[in-house]
Image 1 (tube, one colour):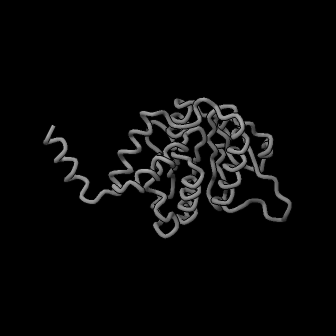
Image 2: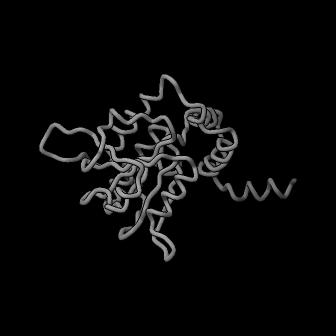
Length: 212
């Protein structure tokens, strides 16, 4: 590891956060999900949650431009005991998130009215149908980006970018105490990131523990 790489990682780690997170539901165009992953990395969002129902997601390396090695991707599939939505939302609520589905329908509030006073998860649906009825029913609320044209929605990666920028601007002046990662979280990430860039890392790890 060069000093430059280590310094750059420390700069990014200092700004990494799990206060906001993004959830993708059944995305069937891999390049769109990959673009969202890239967006999350750019905004310092560490976790992306992907609910796989009919469609499975694989990272598109040409779109993520390496971003996937710096973020944590959590996948959920339907099982006998629960749906993919139940599995994902259960984990998020255990971690203290308020969950908002992005949808222009029903009692959806415009984005500027959403005040992120607690950890917030935003759910984005697939390119054709948006979020499912199950997601809408099980979310804590609905939010939408107001439109001025004939088109009803932005591309998913564009929507994620607008939402994350808006939410981060709202908390920037008075950051919550739990906004940035705790030191033990940084330590775990630092180890994973080092492993991702050091050549023959498994050999180094074995040698290190052999010498203890």
